[in-house]
Length: 199
Length: 99
Image (cartoon, rainbow over the protein chains, first blue to last red):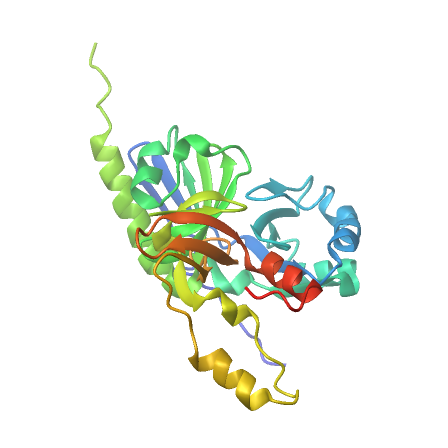
């Protein structure tokens, strides 16, 4: 057996997740999240809700919302469709876990390698959000999940904590473009922020 | 231009792509008698009304649902939007109804 020493690379090509600190805002690459899509089969939505409850510890989320009590959390992506996420280290086989839980009530696909995740953290992300997406920052609540466009890239936006922590997933093949868009918006928003008074 | 998405509320029309006449939902059965004639109608013959028009829009940069949007072609006023799957289900239950 050859001794394989393959090092995983993040979506931006690094061996470590990229972290950018600009002003009061931190942008962190998140390769540590496993994703799986879940769709209810025709007429099976109630059965699916019941089947997923032990894994999720909650009901599947309603429109534009998130749910979940433990490591595995879900967010709404469309009618009868959701994405589940969990820490990659402990749930590398998330799709298989979900599939074995839901049986033929739902269809599951592995999505971890399809998306590049970024965490956006700061005291107030209103300015950045206004520049980034067609989203009304005032309408965001903890757990709000939206699909929108950033820099012509279709992305998921999930509010971990409204206006202070945002999780963004964009297509992995556009990771560098999305990162560029996020950095540009953060720089612009931070440069417009009034400087702290010198008193 | 805003489209009143039945699930997500008012959304910018730039998030949507346009397909065409909502009668495209009522695709004929290709195995039935007279399928040639039915598909000729389905593919090529369209009403082109000056006024109220029902049409299919896709929320591509959103929840990816298909909508049936009612629009006035004279004023571009959007009069309503419903989920295309609800329209299709209703049609299946009453096959004689046309979109």
